[in-house]
Length: 401
Ligand SMILES: Cc1ncc(COP(=O)(O)O)c(C=O)c1O
Image (cartoon, rainbow, N blue to C red; front, side, top):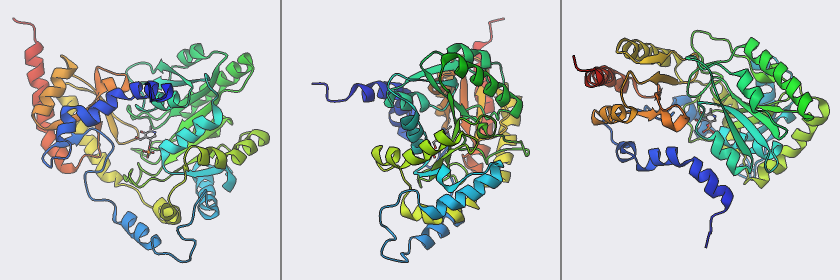
């Protein structure tokens, strides 16, 4: 008997590479050992920001009998976020534009549920975060991957345009981008918007953008950020506090409609947030996280420490022969193996207790991703190892004289 639904089987196949990496790999065997240098996932490797602990403790104390009653998108955090977003993105958000969710995953799942019918197509550029495909399959829709272009992984507008069919409903744009660290500029987004206007006209219905921007606040060198929501009215924003707070286990995020969206569709989305969230399994944040939101909004991971890890790693790896794309945002660094076979390289690193995210998991088998959320000590211990492994690989693959 086939007990598992087709939907789950298909999306589960798509999740196999990341699932095996987390649960069945050499990394899986070692991941909780204290001595390893863990550059794999965007997880904390140092104690949490004290402000998070204070906020959660303070708001865990009930003020009234309803403190832990069912919570939807509560009016206070909605109004608070509307003000913050209006200021941050210079767009006039209304409280009703914002659906509070238990993290970015839920914001994305709710957006897919709201926008996509069975068989609708959604385009996203790769390499990409390793969950879009599986989430789209789980939403009974059809993922369409298009390549980012060149060594800097720019958006390839012609490739996106070519992938558009009469079933296309959505394009997912992730900036700052996981895994490359790129931030797409305003003019690139304007060209994308013009192309989507033309394509929507041609296919006879509007293509929407889901702007997945959980790394929006994590930017280096005062790099500018433009949300597609400001350029293309038919945009929804997915956000998570898991990144900026580096506390992804304390689930908090939101889905927001661009205030530029025409009134009729904007209201339709506002009015359907509640049902979509409830029917997907109560995708609202816990009560305490909602009360704590205004305090959490003020906090951020230490950007100076992150920038210093970025500098050390780009200098050392670049000097050792890796091709390193200096990230503009996110806490990831995308690197190309200096030479040789990816698996040999990963094994050599693992032999020295250093673990990175293999590029095959994000559709880029000749690359690997480093998460700069590793501790400063892990960074220091790993630098000579990255250099040695590159040297050993070079010797191994040098043609005999
Ligand atoms: C691009 C992107 N979107 C969404 C998410 C989901 O974030 P969260 O786990 O905080 O919901 C992640 C997490 O890694 C991500 O990298």
